[in-house]
Length: 333
Image (cartoon, rainbow, N blue to C red; front, side, top):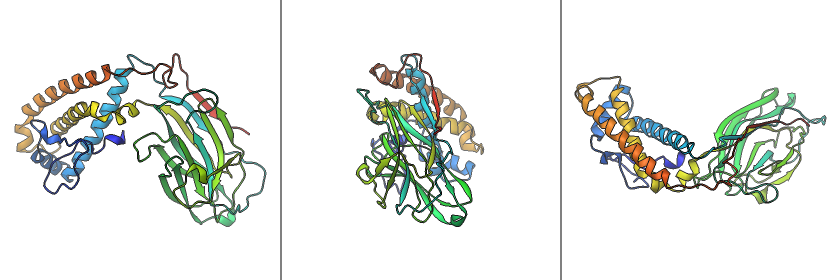
């Protein structure tokens, strides 16, 4: 849940950005800058690095506990489908296309018929692969992912081409700058100076459409800048369509402010108790840290339960299913 990063802040001299919530972890009794400074000495890194680690763990704790709590009321299909577009190509010889970006589009906005999209759904891209012939070995190109609804660039990576299949590790859940799930994306590679192969892709289901596509727009690519068809030009992708409750939190952050505050408190006390450098500060404060940890945990669990008990989800949502099964698809032309 990247939307919660920086939502609650750490007050210190030299702070340049106020937290979105205007709330600081220092407001919790027993937590101050001196404590984090002492912890950072033991970890041989700055106090802001220690704070970043605490924040990351607290957000993970909150996300995991929300899923566990709501699982008592709903069945969430955390992985709906896994797609492997396979390294199978058409027999055509590779050739320059005169186009820039080549790849595939994933669209989970609704699909066919009256099927309604879910605010809980997301796309996670694991890898992109494309094949390179001998004349193009050593050339440098770029892999990118664009949100076609906002024009935002969600991922970029430079790659030096090798002979045969080139694999780009992405491993990214796609979130756009509006802290929302990216619903319509273009996963592509720049083949302007590289001979492209041909690969047939055209998959349509009730809540997902996958198509081959290309674009000549240099950056800021929207749906209107992409030409879709059934040819991915040799680009293949492994991706997952899944669901999580993160969107509930990201769209209603104020409801979970107290829960996040105490989750940060819990992780700060755990960091204190596990400190590698048991200085006089942390040693003499051990009993106090254990009491704070117990108190913070009680407040965290209580505030999270209060927030979640007031949430009712639409059972018609396609992410909430009875006896759901995971679909794994390998595309073979």
